[in-house]
Image 1 (cartoon, protein in one colour):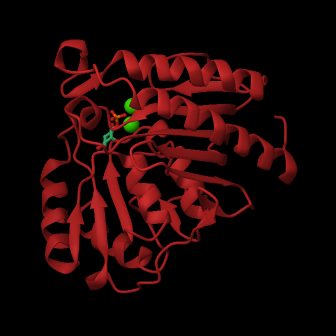
Image 2 (image 1 turned 135 degrees about the horizontal axis):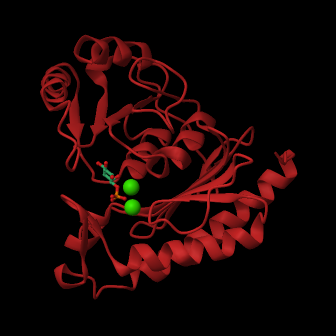
Length: 267
Ligand code: IPD
Ligand code: CA
Ligand code: CA
């Protein structure tokens, strides 16, 4: 598999920022999307022409940027590379919000070597916040270096989570865990965009985020951004394959073991 030095990763990330901002700003202009333009993939899992066109634009531009990389893209564009070097793309994270006019959605794209993210960008066109990171280079929001919050007590933590669309297999445990955290933290939020939940953890607005049933494209960019901002990202049991695993906890690091302990009581 091709390897990249720090200068190459910095250049790739800067270009990924440009492509994300250009594509995200185009998406923001597509205000004609409403119920009539929406397809249902599976129960409550929506897709629009904007998701598809955004993905087409990303794949076209990123293929030119790193021709040897394949694609793991939510709407199925491009082929996964057997070498293990892949762009992992969520062209629109938060489609339900987008369709309902809730301005909480983003693009989320990472370059991964196997299960390891090398570079990632999350762009929120509604707030013009662009989160970026590459391995060893720190994490940024626009031009500003970011880091996770300093809170180290669960009772002072503001947490985010998400609810599954249709995979209710672990609903009972999930609700019991939610009840426990609702009582033992400062509060719980559900934005509707896993990538922004992670970006907001990286910048210190949330102390942590957890969800099960996510896909690699929801979390690959967020994983490198949080790690470079000083936080931790694991599976519920603490294992180290959150992007391609079953479930994910990310935190500022300081409350990570407390979260793993609480989640472990229910899962
Ligand atoms: C969804 C969002 C949501 C999360 C779902 C994801 P999509 O992504 O990230 O917050 O709860 O699990 O599938 O479908 O809007 O790209
Ligand atoms: Ca998504
Ligand atoms: Ca999506």
